[in-house]
Image (cartoon, rainbow, N blue to C red; front, side, top):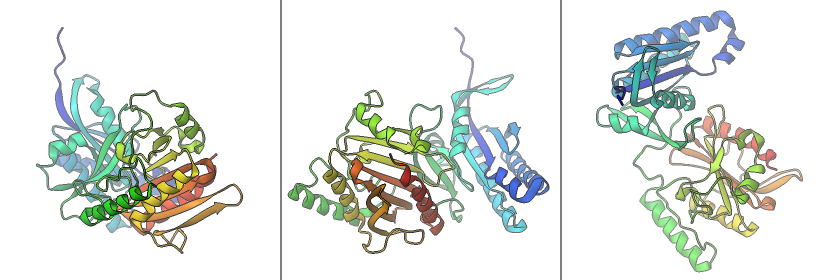
Amino acid sequence: MAIASSRTNGFLFADLRDYTQFVDRHGDRAAAVLLDAYRGLVRAAVADFGGAEIKTEGDSFYVVFPSASSAVQCGLAILDAAARHGRDSGTPIQVGIGVHAGETVETDEGYVGSAVNMAARVCSQARAGELLVTDTVRALTRTMLPVRFVDRRSRRLKGISEPVTLYRVVAEGAAETGPPARETGRGWAGVGRTVQVAVLLTGLLIGGAAAGYLLLASQRPPGPAASPTASPAATFPTAEELALVESLPLPIRDECGRTIAQAERLGSVASVRCDLDIAADADTVWYDLFATRQQVATAFDVIRLRERPPFGDDCSPTVSRAYGNWSAGSTHSGSLMCFQTGGETWIVWTYPADRTMARAVRSGTTPADWSELYAWWDNIKLFQR
C-alpha cells in the first residue's frame, strides 16, 4: 500500500488575548484599529521568515513554516513588534503564540496531521506576551537559535492523551515580557537547599514522622515524594481518587487526573493534578487525600520547614511569604502557607477535617503574579466540599 509522502514543518498559531473585553471597553472602532494593526504586524513577520498563512479567523492566525527555527523566530518577531506598538501607541497588543513541529501530509485542503492540532493546543496555553513551544521544538532549535527555553511545566492539553511539557522562548539578552519562570537545566533550590533538605529528612526519619517520604530538592513541585498510591496503569479514578475528585470545586474537576510524576506525590491515599486553562490565575493545583489528619500536618510541615516562610503575618494580597491559619466562618479552616521560589509563586493550604492538602502554583514572582494567585485561591477555597 502506498503511503502519502510527508514533510516536517513548523506550525505557528497566534491569538489576541482579551480581545472581547477590549471591544466592550473601547468600542468597535478602536477594536477594528487594534485588529488591523495586529494583523499587519503578524503578516509582516510571517513574510520575513518565509511562512505561509493558511487560515485566519477573527484574531487567530494559523501559519506554516519550512522549519521549526523559522516558526520560532517569527513568533519572537511578532511579540517584539506587538511590544513596540504598545510603547508607541499606548494601546497594548496582547498576543499569545504557540509553536509545534512535526510531520504532516499536504492535501488540497491544507496540512493534515497531529502536529497541527498540537500547535493549536499549545497556543491556547500561552498568556499575553508569551511564545510557548513543545519539547520537540526545543530539541530541534536549541543549538540553532540564540534563545533561552524557560520551563512552563507539563500540561494536559485537550485532545492529547499524555501530558506535554511546554517551554517559553525568550531571546538572549531580551527583557522578559511574559510571566517569568524557572529556566530549564537549573535546580530550583541549588546545592545549599539540597543540603538543607537532606538534614531535614534525616531529622524527620529519626523522629519517625516522615516514614515513606523521599525529598527530591531538584524536582518540583515543593513537597515530599513517595511511592505511588495507585499504579499509573490503573484505571482512573480509583475509589479513593473518585472521592477526592468529587470533593473538589466544580469549575476545575474536569481538568484533573491522577498525579503521575513521582516527585509530585506526597504519600497520600489519593493524589490528583489539575492543569488549569489560560483563563485561570493559577497554572496547576494538586489535591492530596491522606489517611489521617496527622499525615496532613506532617506533609504541610515538611514543605514549611524547607521553605521557612515567616510566622506571624498572614498571606494576603500584599504578603507573599508567610504561614499561619485560615478560616471561613464555620465552613472551613486549616493551615496556610505562601512563598516564591525558583521563578514560581506557591500557595499551600489544608482542610484537616477532610484530611486534604492542596498546592497551587503560578509561573512568575512579580507582585501581580502573587496578587492574582491569591485572588484565585480566595475564590476557590470555599468551594471544597
